Structure formats: structure tokens, C-alpha cells
Amino acid sequence: MTAIAIFPDATVTPSCYRAISGQMQGTGRTAGEALDALVAQLDDPGLGSLLVVQPCRADAFFTAEQQQRLGELMDRWRTARDSGIRFADEDRAELDALVEAELRAATARSAALAHRVGA
Image 1 (cartoon, helix red, strand yellow):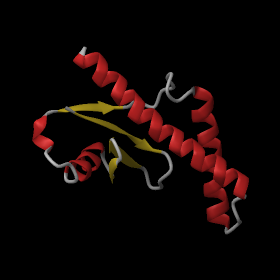
Image 2 (cartoon, one colour):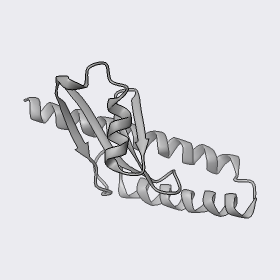
Image 3 (spheres, one colour):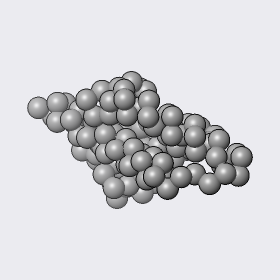
Image 4 (cartoon, helix red, strand yellow):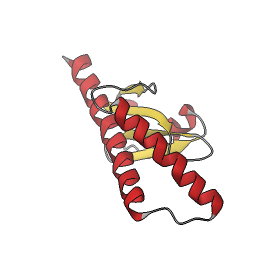
């Protein structure tokens, strides 16, 4: 079974969705486009899939504090970008780490759900 997680990608403007399965990912303006982009990469997408569309709520995999900090850093990054101001290296490193944590959370969330469904 292929586990797929789809969630809004807060790191992209304009808004888009990201679909993830293992190390592969696809993006699109809608959840469907993101899914199509991902499925095109899968070896055999017809084997059965578990699809998870993640609501934007905190959970055990990505906390409310992490969501809040990610939002704050994204706002600061957009302000810097729009103003032509350099975004601080330490802020960029923290933002990159939170984006990676959100990606790992989506993968872990999918795996946990797949385990519950398969149990």
C-alpha cells in the first residue's frame, strides 16, 4: 500500500498543496493537482493507496507552537522578500528546520494512519 499525505504548503506563495509519499513529493494549486503530480512519479500507482489530507491543526507530530513559529517566520520572510531586505541567516535556518519538521510530521502522520488501518 502506498501512503500519501496532502497538506497546504505554507512555504509557497501563492498558496499550493504538497503531496508526499516516502521521499517523493508533488505540488499543485489544489490537492488534486498535487496528488496527480505525485502519482505520476510512483512506480505502480494502481496497487492501492492510503490518502491523507491533513487539516491545518496541531497534533502530536507538529505542535501548535511549531505552527505558530512557522507562521511568524513565513511572515517575516515575506516582508523581507517584498522589501528587498536580507532575511537573517539564523531565521532562514530556523525556517528551513521547521519546514523539514512539518514534512517529517506529514510522513509520520501518514505512516501512523497506515499502521492503524492495516492493524
